[in-house]
Image 1: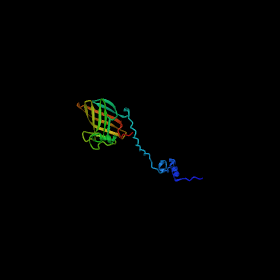
Image 2: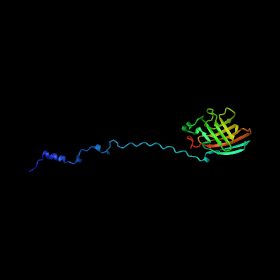
Image 3: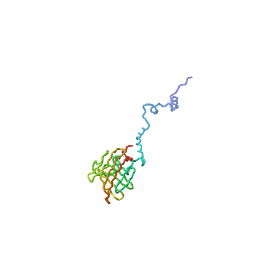
Image 4: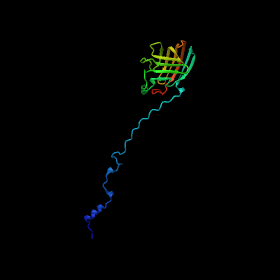
Length: 205
């Protein structure tokens, strides 16, 4: 005799069906194409900073040679560096903003016997970023000079000829003469300099 399946038996079979038979939803599979990305976007990397400028040794920074004759007789050689070359044209904007005064440059040849400086006179555009021959007279100068021998000062006239001037170095010759104050003795000062840009922001590498 064949048994008849009752509605109660059919319901029991449905309740006993495994949970794995639930309806498949493709949204449950993150590997399927078309699904939204769940990983965060990579953070863009910053460009690497420029390499630091080479730090030059004192002997690589150039030199200044001076000779005094007459009432003072001395020979002196000094080296370059930031104390010897305060040049605004070699500085970046931040370095310039920390300074006071007129654009231009300073060349210092300072040693134990002679102190020579080429300085701005305060005249606008008097000291351009190029070679130029500076005439040192009693007035009207584009640049000025300071010369000292110990406690005496030389009231100098003559020329300082800047023969080379770029982002790498400044070079030139010195030809001055005058009287000592105090004392009044006559002194002639000659010399040459070739000083390397010592690591300011706009120096050539």
